[in-house]
Length: 518
Image 1 (cartoon, rainbow, N blue to C red):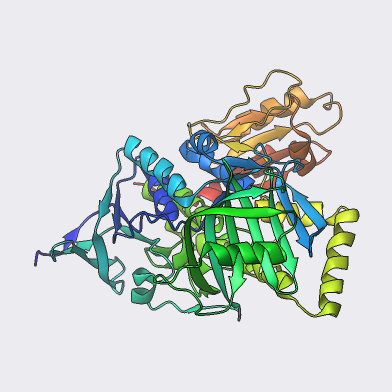
Image 2 (image 1 turned 135 degrees about the vertical axis):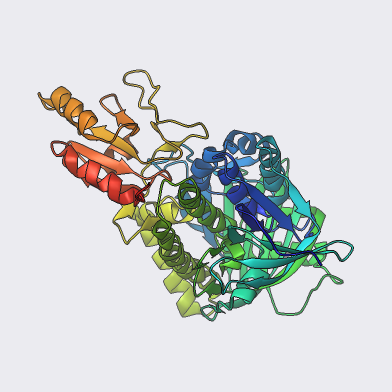
């Protein structure tokens, strides 16, 4: 066995979508990254199949959104039914505050292929067949043992470690972090099937019936993802759900008329909701399923994990590059753990809504859905929740702003006057938005802008939003003039009075937590 080797790099354990996003984010900032994967392989049994608007925004940070759009199938929204009758629709196409007002259905395998191509373009590789077998985090720096195919053991002390190694995470277990959750325990049968159907190809369809729930999600070219609840232990890898069962349940529960022509694959899995008690221990982090497993209702799992990756990576790269003090990493744990609990609660409610079966409860659920749809509440609350555009940190103090975050460095507004195109904030640093308000700019606005630019630290990305912006962004910034400080992930840090730019300068210094340097 070789001696323990020390490295300054980041070790990412797990090469699913979450681990790949972390690695791409760090590599594009010039941070050394090593990615190892125990060899999950690329099974056709790919559960995650939807990317929501918020994640399409964030994936632009690493320059893969356009590739995903060229591969996947766009959906305008999600419709909900009870015994074949449409109750409500959550329209992504009517979201006023996203540059990507649609959901994208795409197999997780295709998502991973796009991410791996990007990783390779950034100079990264995935070391397949390398398993983390032990982790000692007691000395302030993680010390790990990696077992390679063939039995070779490597001892390593990386500078930082990210555990993105799934629900059965070895990293989490070695760190001794508890993994508990609410009492949701349900089994699902899933398939990607060729379907002949009268249902719209532009919507996913959540269908409720007294016998249970079924989801049909178009993926393009006549293929649909079908998911439905089944009793525990009916199916396993040696006895996968057959076409006849899916057809029977489609006939019983689904709206419209559909014929299951062919299963491309099928499988089953049991979900128990779990959330880690901590997402950070020293220089070790958990992300994705290693940190949280939630109900698949609403397709939130992979999207929530990717947002973990983005939240962590811009902070960690800033710490490694000397731009932030290490204390900023504490906010990864507090912010993402709170969001995970919020998502777990909302998906638990969605799961339970599909499983009610007494006449009184069915009538109550249906009436509630229809009333919320008629009053617009469904669109105002459920659509942003599904699309993950409603994610906010610190309660409502740090909401997501409807902006683009480009994969290229620098903030810019290249839109022609009056176009209302989406401004692009800086990928790596806090951006300051100079917002004149929704009315005619104040007479001294030019002087206010000049004072603000002079007061801000040199090199601060600044966007002057005097030109027209999309109505969702105008609504988020408010009717009056403001100076808004925006984090690299597009979340508002603070909205300040434009006539007091010194406050913004002080805020930026505090936000960076800059270390004194010799």
